[in-house]
Structures are given as C-alpha cells and as structure tokens.
Length: 344
Ligand code: AMP
Ligand code: MG
Image 1 (cartoon, rainbow, N blue to C red):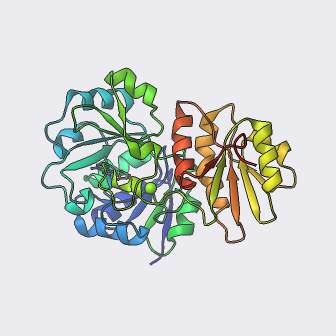
Image 2: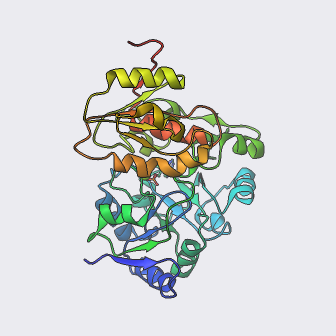
Image 3: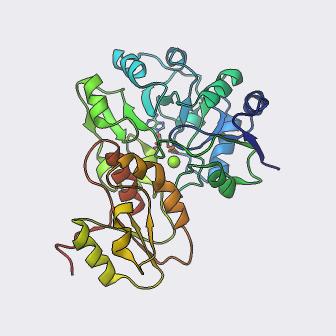
C-alpha cells in the first residue's frame, strides 16, 4: 500500500481523508496533542486495523474523536452535568472524558468496557474531516505501540509508511503530549492521565478531583485498572532512561561522573553548557514548561537509536503542564529515578 501524504491546507485533503475513513481505511490526523491514527470508531473491522498497525494490546481501549460537543449524547448515556461543564470549558481542546457508552459502540473500540472515552480535538482541519466522515473517529497516538508518541507527520511516516492509507500533514503538534483523561463514571471525577488541561484547571471547574494511582506509580501488567493503557511500557526509547532529580549543579556533577561513551543526556536548554562532552540533547526550556511538553517526544524519538546505551534525563518539577511532562518521562524511565544527594 502506498501511504499518501495530504497537506492539511490542500483543498482535496478534507474530502479525501473523510472518504478513506468512511471506506474503513486508516488516516493519521494532526491534533494539538499528538498525531492520531484514525479509523471509523463504529466499524469494528476498521478499528481492528488500528490495533494491527500499532501492535497495540487488545485490552487497551481507544479514544473516540468527535467534531462537536453535541455528539456526547449520541454516543453516551447517563451523562453527568460535569461532562457538559468540562466540554464548555475545554473543548475543542486536550481533554478526554470517560463516560457510559451506548450499546452500539463496538467492543473493539471500548475493549469491552461499559464506558467510552471522548474528545473533541483543537484542530479545525481534523474536526472538519471528522464532520465530513460523519462518524466518530477512533484515534490512538499514531506511534507503534510502546514507542514515543508521534508529534510530526515525519514521525508517523517513519512508523507506518506502506501500512496506512494516508497521513494528513498539519505540521508539529502544539501541546506535544497526549490529552488529559478524566473519568466521570464514578461518584468522584478521577484523573487517569495528565495532559494539556492541567489538574488545576479541572479542579476549578469540577470543584473536586482524585488522581488515579496509575498516574504516579508503575502498574503491574496483570492488574485490572481504570485506564488499561497505563499499565504498559510506554513512550520508551530502546535504551534505559534514568531520571536524575535534584538541583541543577548537583545533578550535572552526578551525570558527568557516571557518563560513559554511548550514553546521552536529555536536559533543559539552560543546562546545555554543563554537559559539554556528554552528548546532551535539550528538549525545551525549564523556564517555560510548554516548550518541554512540545519537545519531549521528538527528543525521545531522536534518542531511540541502538547506538545509545543509557539516557540520563532531567525532569521538570511542579504543576501545570510540567505535571504531564513528569508523568510521560517517569513512564519512559519505568519510574527509575535517582537523587544525587542520596547516591554516589
Ligand atoms: P492513546 O490514545 O493510545 O494515547 O491512549 C488512549 C488512552 O485512553 C489509553 O490509556 C486508554 O487506556 C484510555 N482509555 C480509552 N478508553 C477508555 C475507557 N473507556 N476507560 C478508561 N480509559 C480509557
Ligand atoms: Mg499512546
């Protein structure tokens, strides 16, 4: 199969992508978070192709992407008021809500759960493709399963050339990490994955939020969890990643002491001068956490190279979007974190 590249601004792109989706094909779509690998979310055969192309475990459900908030009631039942309030505040935008699923949504999409995850992406071309396709579009991050997510069309091409019908090229993604996921099916709203909509923003609308343990700790692969995707190895380059915590100079001294050729350092822009000779790669500026989220996955993909033996990574602290960056980096590191104050 030849994978077509469709520039987002070309006039034929929207109708062509919509037609491929209606016909049961796979189209990678740009969003503000990461590139998604889209298929008709109501067609179980089309959805099966996503799992095949990504090598995704069958028990990991997909997010349905909608063109407008009106689709919430078409796809979900028993919708709490909080869902409408969140849609009003954050859609289109990087927020996914888990709600009770109507029975016609295929098991392939929900992985057999009674719930479904919904999001309205903040990308006008992609929303118009969804609208013209006339169906909700199931779209997980377009990376091969387990690999760092795709934030450019070139990343998608590298993973899927010849295996999917088309890629809509909308340039690099603005947010750069996947959507925030909040579960609204229990008595209290629960954060299942941090992302571009911050816990502080959610709490301001909901007045309440609990954080699922999968956000902060490694989950056993056999565990039954609310967000099944969260128990798998994620976002990881081939080499082991170790987060080096603590104050800048102390962390740099630790890394320089332990560094051997073949290692790489993933750091903040501000830290580059401290790592001369240690093959540093900056993924953004510590002073502006949005640059870290925008640059993280491209950097992890660059380090995904068999010649790299070990990656020392610097991780931002604090809330806001930095909280989502911490979560992805800790997962990429399988929660391996050293503190130089406590280690030689
Ligand atoms: P991805 O789009 O591949 O980055 O991952 C989608 C995430 O949404 C995974 O972590 C899924 O487990 C999660 N997800 C999708 N549907 C549901 C659902 N019904 N309940 C809980 N989590 C879900
Ligand atoms: Mg993913």
